[in-house]
Image (tube, rainbow, N blue to C red; front, side, top):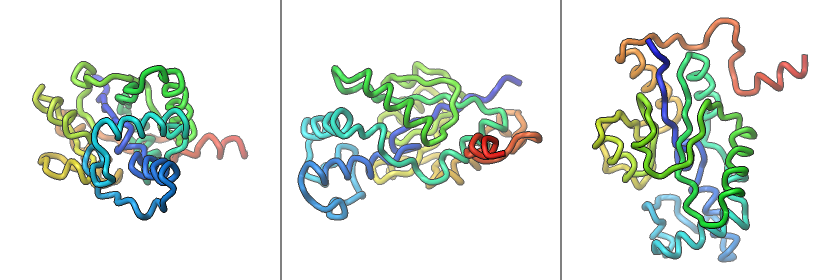
Length: 214
């Protein structure tokens, strides 16, 4: 059997976009971050933003605050993805981050730096909005429009739980522990074998640091 390809989104799946964006908004508006709710809809209307205002603030966050370089990773994301990768799953990162004109060099370089710093394993890195054009055996995604588009094409999508996608049914992961379990089940149901941690490989995303200290 060929390798199982897992398409993995970044913002809202691996990266805590809401937390990073809230810090940007708090700084720009001179308010406490805690005053901004994290129970948000897709364009953060709860913060008083419409689509245009959201995109303007997003651009400021990306290009001036370097949000894509600084935002935190979601808990257990790195370790879970390393375990999946070690088990033979092909990690294909698919992200639609190039929505900001004239900032592509910053966005790409900050994304790669963030992936390295947060120890996110991947074999492919794809920047595009039409995710249906990228082949994978299953996808982990948070954006409702992407989930619906992928499913309409017959693709298997795991919904990574966020406030703005809770109206969608199907596979749902509330955290990376659940995501890892669902992916393992999908591999086995497709006729493959999920081996878990392969013998001879150290567990954990900090393996390189531990090797350096020896």
